[in-house]
Length: 87
Image (cartoon, rainbow, N blue to C red; front, side, top):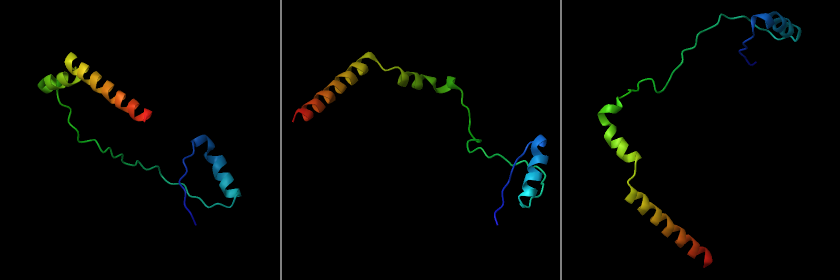
């Protein structure tokens, strides 16, 4: 035998109970239970951005020279890939 939990609106409850009874399915009405919700990140801490914001700002705004170096590096890699394809 298997057990199921159904949630039915009050308007449809009479119909569902009659349907289950006519199908020969035994059922019982239970009181609604408030199930606790568990949030895994409940013990987090929000820190002010004022205290350590200077490091984060520097990481998000790369300098022009680092952008150029990345572009050159990317171009070198693309050239190597193209050379490998030709072989």
